Length: 171
Length: 158
Image (tube, rainbow over all chains, first blue to last red; front, side, top):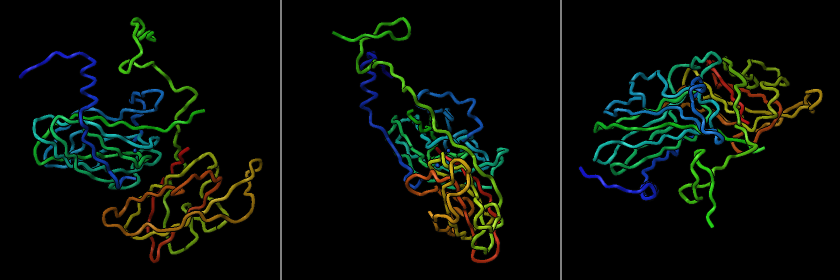
């Protein structure tokens, strides 16, 4: 293991020129809500962090929160958001090959889902060299709850963040 | 001569690519979304039954929608059965709230086909393209035969 001392300027340059792995959910035309009070807003751009953490990916479809309980949402209270972005990176020296899919549903005034199950919004395979960032855009907004699931044939640890953006009016 | 600004309350920094001037979007506010309707409908073969169960063609399903750029109709049907829809819209008098005239403009027709990949959950943006801003909407639904229970939620997006 080696280390080098670099300046902040050099670090920024390296971050900027680093290739970014990206996957687009082209079939997504969708978003969560009750957690709104807990969401730190990056004013004035009206972007909220809906979730942030690490996920142990294995061969099972798991929510980003790690559960395999299909009825549980990954994020809630997403009604006001136009679109979601899932950004992260996987630890390890092997190339990343992680399957992901996005499910969505709506809830009634009491926060109860309108019915069982989810709507499949889209799915994709994230393939990047090791140590690269990836980003997935989920453009189908205004769903109340989303469940973002991942799996990987090779167990991986993924650090990621789900943010949501809200359009704004300039007055 | 470099331009400098006060960063972090105590640090004087040159404006550069790495430390740009802090800016703030002024006079802006987020676009909010409102839940306009949550309703359960028994969808029948009646071609003119709306989401509220009414077959009175002059009654709107939604009123006071003039502020919304679009409506997002999300629904869950009880079975994987094709559901036909017709979306009608009209404007109202801003003072009285009464429709400018009887009748409607049909802005969308179509159907939610049976779909094994997504048998239950449905979604439709109204209108599909462009902006809405209609005052009233009437959303009519029907099936070819039998009945299907449909739970709908409509979100208005400004």
